[in-house]
Amino acid sequence: MQKSKNFPCLIIPTVLLMTACGGGSSNKNAAPQAPSPITTHIVSGKVIDGYVSGAKVWLDINGDKEHNSSEPSAVSGDAGSYTLELNSQERECLAYATLYVDVPVGAIDEDLGEVTEAYQMSKPPSLAPISDADLLHISPLTTVLWQQLENKITASKQPVQSCETLKKNYSLRTELATEIDAVIRNLVSHYNISAEAIYADFIATDDAVSYQAAQGIVTGLKAAYSHKVALETQYSNATEIRVTIYQKEFYDRVNDSLNAWYRNSVIFMPNSFKSKTVRLNDDLASTDLIIYDREESDLAWNGGTLSLQKDIYTSDGGKEYLCLNTETATFTENGTDYQLSNNSPYTTSTSFEACDNKAFGKGDVKYYSVSYREASIHYGAYFTVTHALAEFDTLSHWQSLADKANNLDSAELIAHLEQLPYRFDEEVVIDVTSWHKRITDDTKATRVQTDKYSDGSWVRKTYKADYTYTQECSNDGVNWQSCSG
Image (cartoon, rainbow, N blue to C red):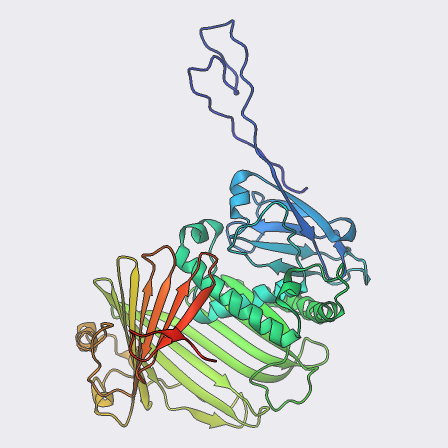
């Protein structure tokens, strides 16, 4: 055990004749009072690649991805077994915090021998009750589940939260649970393994398919760990860095080799964000081909926020790169968020380096968004307008925004968006290319999310206590049936 627990002195009501902290009362003949017992909860599991001994297991209660001295930890022993001793508060956090394993050089993998390259594994929060009898195994399969979940969180710009925040925020827990469910389905399809195998001791069950998948994942984990260390030196002011190395990449569809490896690196800076996906050479360190690159920065602008996003990507093996910029202005007034986004005209180039996407604005599509909250119900409306429509020319001067903070009045944009039929029940009579409206209702015991679209379709998701949901479809929002397909 690497954590020592220092418990505070117990405060006993003064009517007792002696406190647990020493001292006494006016009654000197009374018997001393024993301190109240402190409940210790035991949870256990295994560290699995082969079974790994000598690895540090810890519970990330505050969500900062670093082991702090106040967070419980243990070192794995024979057959990868570990035991964590938790106090009652830590036990409550077990369902809402990520378990990490730091595998150092010198640890022992019972299949491969002494570990010569450090790496880290993890298990995401379950967001569901955990009994003391449950075995919490941490393996490459649980690690890749957590990595993919983090990637989805990154895309939605929803930061991973601490145990305390998750416990108090049902809405956020629901969103994360939905993402976990989607990622598990993806992993089942990707690796051809069962959902149960992701959390299981696949060595004890002699599951050869899961074992082989795990070995490939560990190869990526080790290479990712090394690259992350290098990025931490390069970007010393980063608030967070994530690196994932994996096989099979959607955007590299012309590559016939299933053995190719890819690396996605995500760097969070105080006011910016970088993400890059590359195909790697056989050394799993040097770059063979840049697949996707995104840079985004957020600026205080005209009383609101201006986000500038640059994307460069290829889907034909690098023969051609697509270059695209997007600018987004966001303002908040009286609790309502108003947003305008402009795409720049995309350009193409024959190489990543030749992609010239410096300009913003003057594209052929723009997007409006209005969202607000009433009580515990969130409403949002999203409109797409292409250049062929008369509405596209409205607010035509609201583009190429970076240098116009002193020339534009946010009240003008807000006034125009306020006139849109953004209320959920309002009929959309303005000429837009498409629209989508959503209600997210958290006033009930569990969430109900209702969406309707410009093509006349409706979708309703009703969540259960365990965060799973039933999905219904409708053509009028009155008559509902199970969605087909």
